[in-house]
Amino acid sequence: MTMFSFNRVGARPNASARNPSTAASDRQPFAVRLASDVLVVAGILALFGLIAWILPAIGEPIGPKGVPSQVSTHLADLPYYALRSVFRMLVALFFSLVFTFIYGTAAARCRRLSRVLIPLLDILQSVPILGFLSATITIWMVLFPGSMLGVEAASIFAIFTSQAWNMAFSFTRSLTSEPTELDEAARSLQLTRWQRFWTLDVPNAMIPLLWNCMMSVGGGWFFLTASEMISVNNRTYALPGIGSFVAQAAAEENLAAICWAIVTMVLVVLLIDVLLWKPLTAWAEKFRITQSESAVRKTSVVLTIIRQSHIDEMVAWLFRPVGDLFDTLARPLGRTGGRWAADVKSARSRALDVVFTVLVLAACAFGLVQLMLVIHRDAGFGELGQAFVLGMVTFLRVALLTLVCSVIWVPIGAMIGMNPRVSRFMQPIVQVLASFPSNFTFPFVTLWFVACSVDINWGSILLMALGTQWYILFNVIAGASQIPDDLREMTRSFQLGRWQRWRDLILPAVFGSWVTGGITAAGGAWNASIVSEIVSYGRHTLTASGLGAYIAEATESGNTVRTIIGVTVMSVFVVAVNRLFWNPLQRMAERRFALN
Image (cartoon, rainbow, N blue to C red; front, top):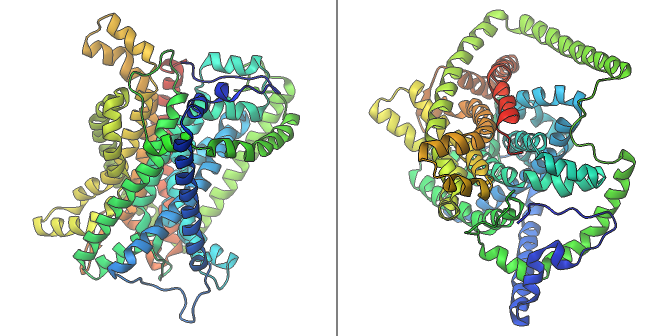
């Protein structure tokens, strides 16, 4: 079974050549196809009906008392709150996907921009969600004056900042590690850049990108409380949602309400897995690079119903004119070039490189000088030194967390990804664990810490791990699932021992995925420190020494300068670790362990 099929421009292959499932669905009895059509149409109408029900509340005007600072904890409101949270999550995921395609393509395909975009991605993932909220909440309120849509947009943007960066990392890595033979095929067929993007780039990145989408949603759930109960500049903006429900219940010491919110959250995660993730992972199996079909294929009832209906033909008919339009617009950009050429640069190219580098360095120097002036005037460099000391404490926590999680989850993730039967059984479990917002359990953990006299300086490591360890697991599962079946069969044919199989095939094959997961897990751990180093339940508040607690306290009190100092120091630590440790490992993965 080949991974992709390339068609000449203007060629119109028959339906079965484009999609084998279409031919299979055509052989279904008419009654089966009719029933599938009814179910799909009913699902689409239900989806649009729910959106139409939610939208009026999102744009309602702000009342005379201003934006509410708390929400109701009545159990009857939980289903509606859960629906509002899911809506925010999916809207943020859509924008994250658009951002990933644009940003990742520019970072992988444009040589000069990559020198800025990739380090900038390191900085963006290092900025905690409270840093984005404190800087943008006023902007969103100004853009939508007198409307709850401003606070809603701020909440969606906050969720977006917890989702987009690891997806962009994954997509960029997939573009820079495309198999050589497929890259040469795209060049020989002289595909336009638009054709190459949808024929090679996106299919090649589909499996790891899909797993990172699932992980991004899990990260969004983790920060749901902070993005729905926004506490910045001595103000609290509360939006109806399951995250704000838990925050309010914790403030009221209502354990029963928190338990019901946890039950609701588990049901929501399972429903999303059945209706979205399981169909997508089964559909994405056709993009695996392999010469032989997998012995055990992933299945999904929802995907089977969709394939038996006419919805795919209708979607293709509706969007084909749009695709043709973008293909026409992209033709002036020339034929596909893939990666930049390694040829000797011309004098003009070298001169442009020098000018570009000088401009970037000048902009960075100007920004750094202005930042130092603000810090010196409003806080002093002693405050900056204190933040660096706290940053070192948090760095030690992040390093220990990454090491322990790698030792635990790399072998487990590889075994899950390489065994379709285990993957089919474990995926819902892993998805629930990863998507479940572990900070919902923080009130119980806080009471346990208080009762057992657990030092929050050590306990915060556990709290950070609950939300970030899944980045490593999900990326390793995605990497292991992409190992071609013929390579696995070859190791069995040569009768390699278990250790030899791990040393010569599995660990090298998942090394690049582990690096991507490690980068995003470390970045996620830095972000998670803002909600893990300071936890509270009712009158109990535990605060650890660290940069996360420093930023959380500065943001809540409205101390802008201390917030800037904390965010800057966190960015410095994350970028330095990525430059000195993760980037060399990533280059090694691309050079030595890519499945090309």
